[in-house]
Length: 210
Image (tube, rainbow, N blue to C red; front, side, top):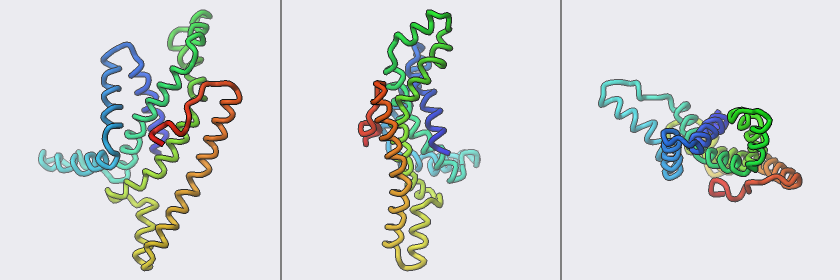
């Protein structure tokens, strides 16, 4: 649930940051820098615990949210900041001649962007987006701190019940690896295909600090 949200929000942020209007560009830039400059774990605590405490002081439970949805939203919001920079780099990688050619045949700026520039940019950003899928898969274990029952939490619970925590952690690590490796090789395959076609590329190993 988080990754599709992150991709969509990231695209919106990329478009806002690339805008010539400061009222769009500045809030997007501020959001991206704040989110990328603070740990995901801190963001989870702030949204789940701090907002709830603030609501208690104000005498309302409107700021108390279900842990599962907080986990989804925080993962999506955090990765959206990284996706925004990936999308922005992908859009900028498209030759300006593509846009100019679209405009010369009568397309509007909006049509040129959505019909010509954006489809080509998506092909470029697919490998780093897949890389972020892998990173999010691993970071999902952080939502256990707010009580979400995810893979690591279940492994620990089963391990404590059977007095075999260490063994269950190894099993959890195996599951994470099993889920991550296919995504990794898919990203590498797409990256090679794009390189063979002579398209600009965003290297997997330089995105999101990996």
